[in-house]
Length: 478
Ligand code: BGC
Image (cartoon, rainbow, N blue to C red; front, side):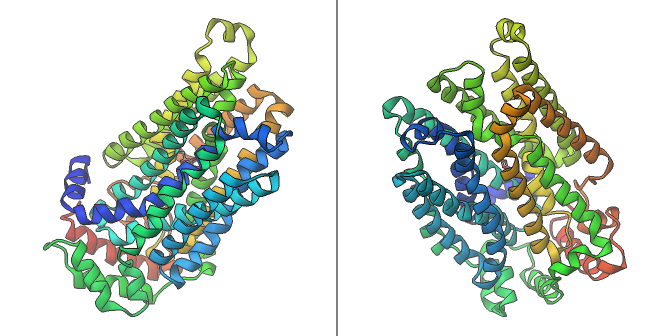
């Protein structure tokens, strides 16, 4: 589907858009709570006596351990008590976590608060796109899934603006955390008024309610009965986690986990969490570093919008490859900046320029495409568990990279660290070219065939193919 089609269709379907906006507040908070620490850390270090690199790193990274745990629990919770109630709980966890972090008086209290927040972040990263995707008609699903990433980047930007706004006032890092309670409460209360996912309702045998939900969010041209029949067929052949290592699915899992790993090991979150620290390394003062972080946040949002508009035209691989080449070149430039005093002297703006081009490359490529592709490459029946596995790899590697960043800069120098990430960038490009399939304009069945699905997943191919053909037919071949 082209960009015009997506915008027109999404605008026509305002009721659904409203649900997507409320649900994606979870994505917004994922961005806010991961982004806010960069600025807060500059000031809380003194108040909470975070003296060592280890303590500072763990304050940043413990949220990610919470997120791994949250992703694990929410996969189960979303099936058990519904996506909607899971999201209400995660909104409440966001509120209590924000207040807990704002009131923390010691290192251990801030660690506990950040871990608690992480549970909600891990839940949001998984259940928000899942819930939105299950409500959305197939023809606009790609754009709407990436809309969640737009909310993630908007959350990061707002966190930077809040950090920047509060810094000169009173260095009040407590308010930076406390403000996250507002969207958290909006999510918890807002989800109370939202419908259950029709897929979850069918799984629970509540077909009539599922029909009512679909009738409310579909237009005349959509065949609700056909959609219910598809969901029923798929849910009757639900695959288990064990099926994930079946021969025919291994290549898909390799692609999903590979994307999850590369999205993190190119060092995105050293930039997102430590941008002000990196800019301080490059000679900025606290407030200047926070102002420049806002430029980084704006660039991230702007280029995510570019990706949403053009991903379906130019293809996922095009953006993955060019975006990752751009970010790799920026990492090499950043390394040169720290390596050579004469470069720093002659080109003092180079560090910021490299961070901006880095984030541009990530925002059009690995940022949205990882979350989009893991929702496209797996057969319908095992999409849930397979996405959960990829999500856990993503948060686990996020933890490993951000936890080791400051230590690495001391151990192998700043330039060595950025060049190491650049090396991972080169490996990522080779992986995209040789292993990752193009999913633009391809049906699920074609994608699975490209990835070598065999008899082991014959049931998946048949059902997913049938569901996909029906979806294609409904959307007029789009
Ligand atoms: C990644 C996050 C990252 C964010 C930055 C997301 O796709 O999963 O780890 O912080 O993009 O925009």
